[in-house]
Length: 528
Image 1 (cartoon, rainbow, N blue to C red):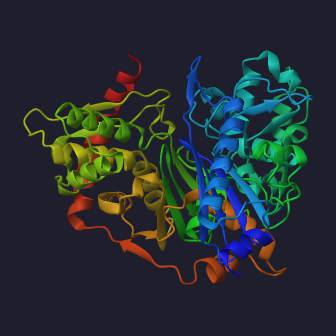
Image 2: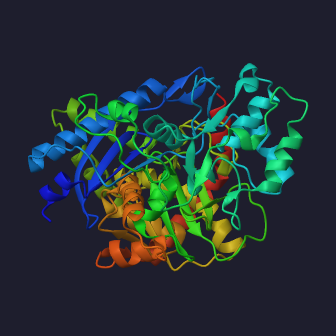
Image 3: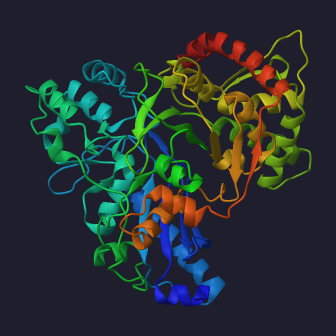
């Protein structure tokens, strides 16, 4: 079938991902190739000390993004988008979205970026003998209980951003197992919330204002490949008020951005992993066996199939780099030379590629928010340099790029050196790699591993959730997701691989020695 025939016959699939700086929709064909896309830019808000997105902006952004997709389809193919074979929603993992019996939101959405749950995270980690990071939904819930917040006796439903949008569109209070693993620990044997830990949480909350069983408020987990609901009339109207796009489309389970990144890079098998780098940066490493110890720097989440994954998540990545690029652009504009944003980034990356491997003693901390991996509950961007060395633009640019991956390297050292986790390949994707020079080689040096960028690296999580929707519509009974991705999606797809260079590895190690010694200064600066 031609593309136009596929669109007309509803043989395509749609994926929408709500990321930290944009909402993106992708339409894919039967061969999984992206056909059209829609985009809506947005930003989180710091309101009363809480990083949040108002739910009105969620709905408005979703609608604008879908309108953009429909316009792109009609502009390219002269065909109106009326239906599709499968649909999927993905979004930033973790955070705190709670509602009462009537569906009223009880407190503003507390996103993954907040670091306000240190007490709860520590107590749950001790009680479960399982690391509970601050950004996990259960940490937010327990912190609210410990603080005796007035809303906690009204909670009837807790979910993630992907789960919330899926509910708006289908009316189903469900979740994919990967996104669920950022709410509460998962038992890999049952592929459900860990029953022993659930019972322990109920014990911990006895005598508090929170009187429900935890299992009563959590979304139901739907296995990958199963249908998780269909687009309702109300959901179709929300997506497309014109009524062109029709109800009835089946939805796959909503998933977290970490899991859609795994699907988009075909890294769901043991000894594989991926690094996603944008506003935050995280590595997902599929485990062959359980870790020997509990590490506060490492989460244990799951693949979209429920297999254990070691996740090193850092709250800060490209935000400070973006700010510096904007500053350099302003300087050039003041001098009468204006460059488009993509050319500005190419300029800075080009300088960074020429910088000294150790950045000439210039150290950059990109902490806009707190960073649990290095034990900071608040952040403030900081730059320092040695007065006895030069201050070259190339070294500064390279330090800014180093800063985007430095904290990730600290967490990954625990996996590879302390836990002896073996890696065969790591795939990278996300905004940091739109220009792979020098970010790809710098990441290779930081992790001491080969880094591969697939042809699809720029497509991201929206494409990943579209693939999960396609798997739902095309899988056979015995076909696993790993088989589907390897044999049908990535079979003929090429990528570029970069290995660590000795000079870069040594230079990055020298940089990190100063970086870790200076974290004390960052800790003080963040409190000023």
